[in-house]
Amino acid sequence: MSARATAISERRRQELVIAAYRQIAERGFEGLRTREVVAEVGVNIATLHYYFPSKESLIRGVLGHAMDRFRTTLEPHGSPGDQLRNHLRAVRKLMVQEPELGAVMGELALRSSRDRSVHGIVNELFNSWQTVLRGLLRRGVREGKLRSDLDSDAVAALVMATLMSSTLPPMSEAGRGDLAVRQLERWMGLSSRKSSN
Image 1 (cartoon, rainbow, N blue to C red):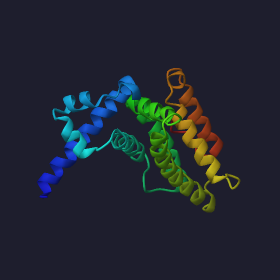
Image 2 (image 1 turned 90 degrees about the vertical axis):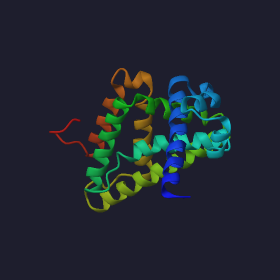
Image 3 (image 1 turned 30 degrees about the vertical axis):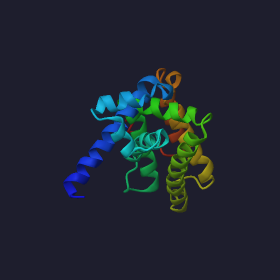
Image 4 (image 1 turned 120 degrees about the vertical axis):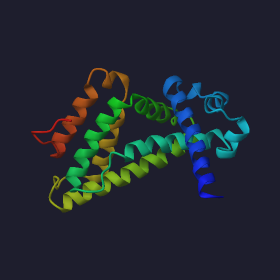
């Protein structure tokens, strides 16, 4: 396959993922209709099945896209403390700018309690996120930038739980999610007086 054909193929795959992502954000998991996904992209159902042989593989693509949005908030430079602080603030900002991201993540996380295949996909992605956070926390403790009594596994899970719960409407609409993330920063010793993005 030529480089141009590969680029076209990847663009088509991404268009299908985005169409499914939007449907889940607007109507929930139950509202995901593959016929509407293909109609939005302007292809037929056979094309969808070429890229995503099953609904599970399409969901994996949607979750991959959502997690890629989270990954954009992890900067590879700076101290572990700076990286964590920036991650928390960037996720908070991302959730305000892209509320559909929280809707999709929340919807699929809830669905994972009733659907084993979705559970496996969500669990795999959350394990990856926790591994990255745990590594940053361990480095921060080793370098003396974070409190030495931090349990990196527990704190990574707490960061994830706080960020995920901040996407729920009762938390985000009343500003509770923002307050929770700011308190988490203070508790971890990550807050700085001058910045409050």
